[in-house]
Length: 401
Image (cartoon, rainbow, N blue to C red; front, side):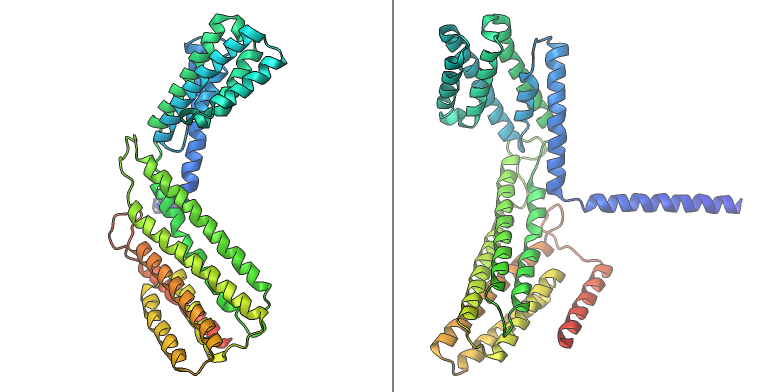
């Protein structure tokens, strides 16, 4: 009996462990990928349902436009789905009547097809159907090429199955987890400070006496990659704002103002990082002899900033402000030439701006909970211990080198 009870307890513990690991993996899923995956599933569901409704319920002949319209109308936000769905219905009406008119006048020969495509794209230049220019041309082309103009019932069917597809697509997008993109925008932005800190680390580690100017090109590529990721965060931010419109889940996404401020700060940090890399490259090309004390002090502050960002050590980041002040006053009092002081001052100013941007970003991240309520997020003792160990290892490796 005791052995059976022990085996039962072991199975329960094993099941709990599996469920715990599953919950942990689900909690760490990237919201951007989750939303994209859900949209993909919804698109497939809308296409299948539209075909079923058009063929089995409405008994429409050749209802190929129904799933096509449903797939096209499932967009990343409810607002865009409604606006694009309305445009698509209007574009289909234009296409059908255009195909009917040209088919009646010119038949279904090559001249009629070419003129239909031309006129369809010209109509698509109108502001309120501009995004559906291809829909007008291709739908008209299919309607004319399949001979639907000779059968009034098929001509009406093209309009009905498009309306069915749009209706099904809107219903699926509205009823099946209506998308809110704010969590995706926040999740994407949380990765940016670490990326920028890694670029700063590479710059500091590569800043030696025998620096090759070609090495700085890799820094510039990394900085531009971070800039592209910031642009992606802006795109997600605008989608987050738009996703609240007409959305039954919530009318206003959370925390977009704070997110906008952080992205502006990170953009400034990227600009200063790029300026820093170009200044170092110019110095390397000119074979400028740097003051060894300045180089080591600057590198130490840059590396400490990168380490503190990776560890989310806000206290260390704030303490580095004093080090930046000291290096500024120390070399301001030194007797340097005008060219040396201009170069050193530029690098210190760039580093200060990057440090300030990263400090604000880390402060924002620590003060934001996953649901973006502005409450302080407490770190677990295990997480604090891991961060202290990583910091100690980095300091030991740096002192040893």
